[in-house]
Image (cartoon, rainbow, N blue to C red; front, side):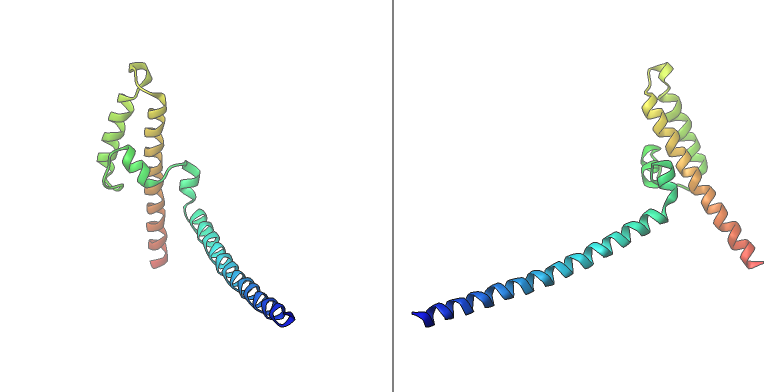
Length: 127
C-alpha cells in the first residue's frame, strides 16, 4: 500500500509539473504576441497623425462623399458642394451630416497637402 501511494504521488507530481511547464510556455507565447500587437498599434498611431487630428480616415471620407478616387479634385468639390447644400439645416437638412461632409472634405484636402509636401521635398532632394 505505501508503494502504491508513492507511485500515485510521483505520477501526480509529474502531471502537475508538465502542466506548469506547458502553462509557462503558453504564457510566453501570449506575452510575445501581445508585445508584437502593441508595437503594431504604436506604428499605426504614429503613422497616421492626420487621421487622429481630423477624426476621420481617408476611406471614410471617400465613402461620405461617394468618391472612388481621392485625387479627383473636381469631382470631390462637386460632390461636396451638393452634399453640403442638401444637408443645410435651413432647408430641413441635418447639421450632423453637414459637419460630416465638411470633415470629409477637410480630410481629403489634408491628404492633398501631404502629397504636395512630399512631392516638394522630393524635388528639393533631387536638386
